[in-house]
Image (tube, rainbow, N blue to C red):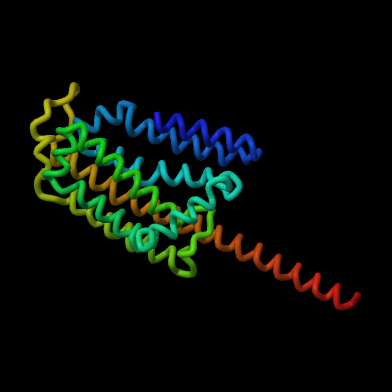
Length: 256
């Protein structure tokens, strides 16, 4: 229901401002990934296979937020810009990129503590809470990198690199630890009936899931850094063009 409401609101606003089709497709793809994670066979298989549950988490914390945010522009967000800026100011230290790093890393590690991980699979309320925290942590994390609204705490210079590397390395280490753990550490999958045809052993399943996490973190970090570098170059070019135009206008006024 939430996905439907957000999609309708976005499409109406996109149509009002005559937005780019690429932005629309990006936003819709992000919403589609949320549905894939929550109501497709991925959700059912996540209760039987660790690596599918890991895939579900990564869709919610990284891929869906990235695509949704890439679908936004200053013009599309204009009706909410002031409210977002007031919210940032009211949030204080919670709006700082360092908090977003901590929230992202802690959320990933917290929900992979064996008793909590098993509880999420055994109790639907805990599972919903897990999904909400993943979505919130991912949304806030990527907002600091991809938001079209210039924040007072916007990352500049080497900031995005430090921001990405510090986070992705810490989460990637979790994936490596899961991949090379000597034994399966989640009791839930030990007690599940085998799929037909037979599935992977719990240990192999966990190793694949850990490798998926570690690999995804590395790939996303690399692609995001390239994107941010290209965007920074484009912004620099536009700034230079504005400066040259201003100097040219100033010279013309003096000559006149």
